[in-house]
Length: 318
Image (cartoon, rainbow, N blue to C red):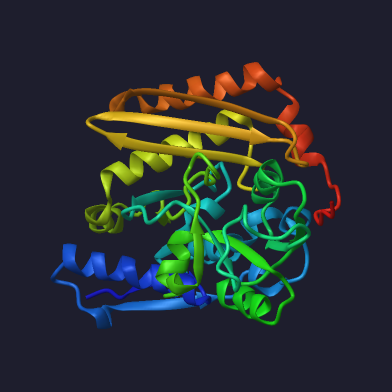
């Protein structure tokens, strides 16, 4: 039986996501054995450069590029990705052949004082590497210090424990995957902080023409998660945005209806534009076009491009 080689980043989070896919793949393809599957780990540019702002060195695509390259070169058969890190437009010759069930999409606060965001003292130092999170935090409270932090979840929590920061904001799904749930002091509702497109979504990327493998992998696809992910990414495409833009996007499905929320912020958090609407699930692409258009009607066609080209100082002091 042919061995399947799966490409993954080296982080503990990435390996956990890859093993989640393997478990689902083996259940849906019982004739495969674990020894027929190999994980090939890759140190991406985003993993190697732990100092600089992502938007200044190539964006979150830095976590994808090297893995995609070895997929295209035939060194791996499958790539496992956090879909929130995927560029809006797919690399030619590849496709997302499966979406695993979406995890917890909420944002979470971690600090050692067991305080909520509104209970933190003025001038508390909040660590994040996300322009979106920076804008959303400043929209909630302008008396907090925002300071760039890079590294995986373990590294960031180490920096918090060394008191380089007073609090961190991270994706709750990732925190749970790494068993740091006990450190969470607040889980934000989507009305407080809207997550980025495809937060806690895992995508399985293959070559577009590898039909035999796609057929095997398609059995792991979670339909609702797939529709939600496609809808959220379509909003980014309509807006001409990317995974570094200060934009929150969240879709949910209930009773054959899909509801979509989108918000966009200025870098300083002072301006916020918001749109939401619903449709039948089958019409999810048109819904994304409509909600994206509602945002464009408010901000104009060049607003997001101007935001993405703005290279202001990431750190903020009130």
